[in-house]
Length: 597
Image (cartoon, rainbow, N blue to C red; front, side, top):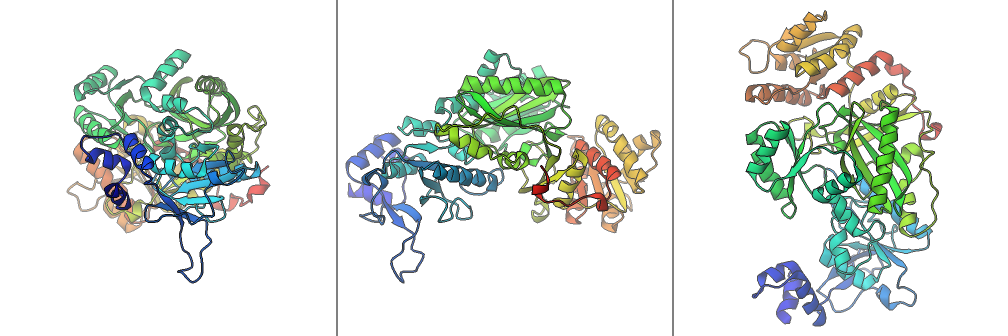
């Protein structure tokens, strides 16, 4: 028994011990054995006074290096303490895909619970969050978000239940194992969370509902995945399950890429199958943030991505409410969201992502948790979505706002902030895996005003000198034809790589042709950027050929390194040109949030 106690003091988890002993045991068996032997952690307070006088802090942690709690008594030992505590799981470490937006959700959830009269405990291991401020929750545990540690905490707290839907993907992944261990998960049933997260189960649900989705197949082998790609045609998406921020999600354009991406996806999510799905090109992505009670939708917001599908939602420019979506498409989206909510018996927050092309809708995925855009939607609609989600989870009354959320006389646009300039050599291109490290939301009287404000807020400047155009495929060139005319009409000198220069000249737009970086020429696109002649670069990647990939990368990287504005998406570039044509800098009104009613 002393060996077991020493192993726990050395930091070995129950799972690690279960693997190490012979014959092998399960994690549950090790836990039961050490509890029966009295090998359990105690709660200690972090000493913030350096021993000058006894610490009385809310900064708590669990340790096996002790024989008594620092607290007066665990919650279960206090009269009336049982059934009144709610444990909220935080988001853990800040990283790309999980940052302050989920912490905002956790803090607002705790505030709502305290207003409702519940005692609260937060579990999080990131001291940089607001949720780990000493006065946010009644108990603050600086602890890892693992099943073992959470069971230890809940044995001490004896909570009414655990909230897993506010801290992002990390706590959401714990819903099923915590429920199997006997904890009550507040809100949506854990089995429904698993049904939405598991690609196979969720696809079967959509089939039962008669809701369209991109064609897909579980990749049992590389050969099966390659055969599926041949059937639906390249490009295809490689998508692991139970991951955040599009980790290991990629678009494969040929067999060699597909094989490499499959291996990477399997490493990222080894316990779940990899899914290969059809890539729907030219589709608009639309997403819904919503709250439901027992499957009935109470409130929702409908946002559209400026970029076509293929850019991660965290890296997209997003307009709310949606401005360029057919009325019929909106109506059908609402109906599908209600069907999904009812089928999964959702209580609390959720997010559904759609592809819309020529009024045909396909569902990409459904997350039964708060999304990173919940704070954005709450700000735009002046309605706290998290408070509305917390109340039904606690069986408290809530107003149905599902029919009154779109009567706005303003538009908000959220633009991503990137840190490519701080990462030497990184390719500043957008894809399925999230890369942005921040975002800014701006309001305007119309889409163009809000869009221009948001881009200026994340570091873009209004071009005054010239624009370098490298506009990708013929389809992309065609989409950017009107934008090129607008840039020329603004008095900007246009420069273009060879193919783009030829195309624009054929359409009556004069440009100065420049050489590719890898050309043997005295002056190339890189020299042009270095000279300061351009203050905006449009580079739309078009090819998978190594030389063209390198040329595009060198242009993008040079623009970032020289601090020149860079746009790598045709839809964003086209809207930027429209906004510049409509608004001058002095036309943009700076107004307080309260002025938008």
